[in-house]
Length: 331
Figure: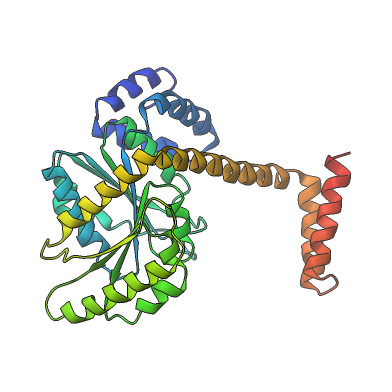
């Protein structure tokens, strides 16, 4: 059990890569219990000097794209190369019950059993975008534990692509051909965020459909403005089921990292991500503190009821709330 007395020993064990300690540290960081907040903050502060050495990858894809199959084949390849791999698999939480299935480990059985791999299924808990609110901090724990590659797998719905792209070095969009979603992947702006597009399931009778989809994605990437001046996003194909093309994906990721590291862009990207994360957390904390005030909450509920009854327009309601805040807290 992690507590104030064992914190220093926890950091030591974490740096040794002890899996049980990593799991306990993740549970602590994920906890929303008020008593756990100071301790989790101390833990994160203590490990910060030992973070930043892992390659951070984000993988998204529509349901049925074969993310779990791809991740297992990809993760085992990295282990074959002598690397340690951590996977943070974000699972969508039910809007009704709030629960999650968290079944990703059952779909990556070989990788889950590997000593050089660690898989942590986490619920999105209703957080905007589908990515766990603590996913960034879980990555830091994995880095402190000595993992060489930290992967965040997103549910691939809503705003999850944008959120995960803003916390990793290389963002990979896993697609399939002939599923009727090819154009949708281009239209919803996904192409502007992806550093690599990988078309999976290039096997069986899908070769022609995959070739067509690859040409379409490549054409789109050459028209769109580049995310980075130094890097032209690539489109690759693979069969995760047959474990073909996985090595080429890893080579492309390696090329991407080398390109951005040499230019100095990668360091700047990580710095900006940290600043953006602080801004986001500051806004959420400010809202939390604001609604914790009984007078504001009471006025907000009154205004909300007026809007519901069509006595006020939402715009007027917002103006009233803004005036209330300025009058009561900024004078």
